[in-house]
Length: 152
View: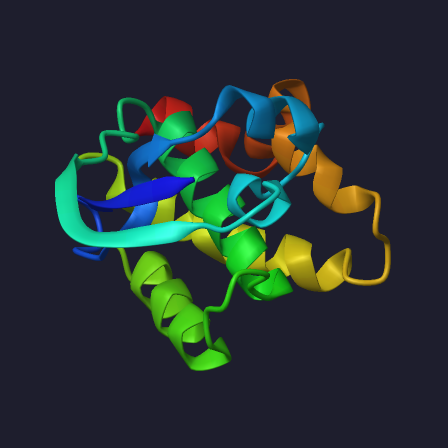
């Protein structure tokens, strides 16, 4: 797989999150139901220093929250593809401080909730699978933030 970076409009980071990914079809078929696509793909991942664009995940409060939640839950669990703990912590801090643009506060809340989720589920190897379950994610967001999302 080759990954081109993307600019994150709520926290200013530029890295693989939301970036352009070029993946062999056979590698996708071998991957299964992985939580972290980069970590699960067989073979080598190449990261390009070029930026492909801006990731646009913040169309609704839920989408912004989900982006922060999933990314920070994975970062808090520990990188499986060579990122240092310091780099992961810097990214988590940027996500939790998100304040630029529409629904940025939902991305920040999602980041904090994702870190909490990672710590609470650290001893249960099956729980991170919820990160790939759209129904569970929506229910979890609604349980934590529905009133705020409706009230704005």
